[in-house]
Image (cartoon, one colour):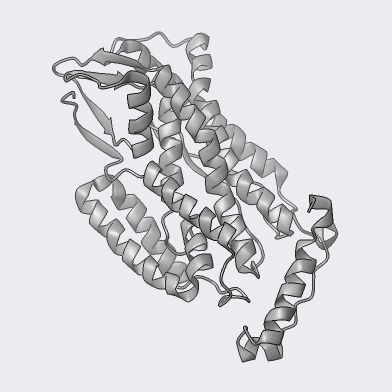
Length: 340
């Protein structure tokens, strides 16, 4: 079926009518609720944004990530020796290696959600990028606002999983490109710095390109590789099956109200991770605030008790695989690098 032939609202109405007829919905819902397709698009006031704010935040994020990228390239060019690098326009341009890559990964993720919302005519904002004067990243990521309830599990699942898949598709080639542009060099005996935890996908790419790295040597990561690493970390964080994160949407669509137990269990896991690495502390606090604000239970859809089709269950398994490939238990450790 072509896109022009598919009307998601008509299909949703037909699905709900079948559910009412079969009694799959709760009696209170079947007796009191009638689904009326809303008017579409801008005629209904949908998809209207403060474009100036979207552009301003993007430009601010572009500026900060380029500055961070220039600093990263200077560190990369010094080969762990902390040799002063002259700040000039050439260095600023090289900062785009990181900036363009990380904005592409984050942008692909959020536009994946956005275009899925447009497909289903669910009102959503354009992506808001979050600039932050952080010396390591220059950004806190990006997000979109979904401004109306999502009535069906299929819609919720498709919108929730579209972002991680889109970001992953951009991050994987960036990872291989970044690692191929990196260098394997000996570590200075007294070098101290940040050690980045290596997800399984990162380890696989590193081994395929460079093989086994000998003891006392290390991968001097190119800024494109760091952007891909950060993009994978962002993908893993979003795929945590908790609350209203992307992973929480997918888990609710698959398990329904039983997903609450997964949320509780995964919150316990994140608390445990803080004992393994303090870099999880801020994320654990943010998750706790989210659950305190919005509750443990995911907002219900009208067809909560209707199982997903097999195709979406396979995609849910793929989401789990993405999470495993992008996850690292110790993301950032400020410790002495002892070599390999």
